[in-house]
Image (cartoon, rainbow, N blue to C red):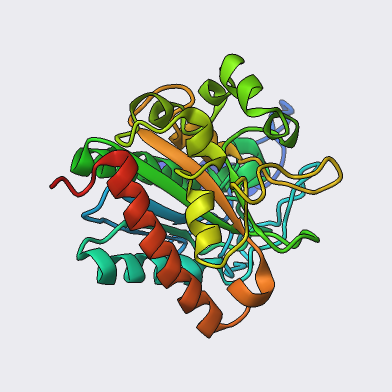
Length: 320
């Protein structure tokens, strides 16, 4: 007689046999799929902290004072500008000079100019170039450029609302051989060397950054007089003891002389292409003007006097 094994024992044996075979490939050749690892999240680049890069102060006068190349900040988070032809030297002491001009003008008139300062060193960011050259094509600085130019646009528009018209003055420094202030109106040295009649007949002044002033100067002065004659800013600076070109005493740079005509901002914020704001790029020499705190303060005070007179005679501000 054959003994019968309980059904539960038979089922248990089948189950254990199945488990014992489950550790490897089955006879059918089917392999278990590999486990997919979780995706790797790349490290995130922190956003650029732009705090302290740019400074703007609203004013109460139809005058905007700007120092785009006076910054000293060199954050390691920003690569250096390496574009072809990039200028990377800062204009020493021009940020301090711009502040002094604003303060001196307020002391003299009771009204404060608008002020704009770029605190980034020029090797990192150029506040007087178009987007690509200003940033060295580093897109992380696109927002800085947009903020800078938007604020300059806003400052000039607000300044013009104060007096109906406004003057944009950009403070720079040069190291040219001739120690004089170079006033840039977007006119080349070759154009400045034209005769007074040629300047007038050829409508050269309509190509300048003070083209609007040429048509509506309150004094009625001629275009040449506003550029380099008795009604010009150059005449007022020379009269205060600071040689300037163009001016009655120095109407044009010689062909061999270095001379800055004005840059991107002078085009954008001046009146050559219309608008209510005229622009002048002011390149200041170093020794005797920008070199010491005393010299900077003395020049700022004399410039404030000249600007107040210029605004009164040519823009009718303040209105009597």
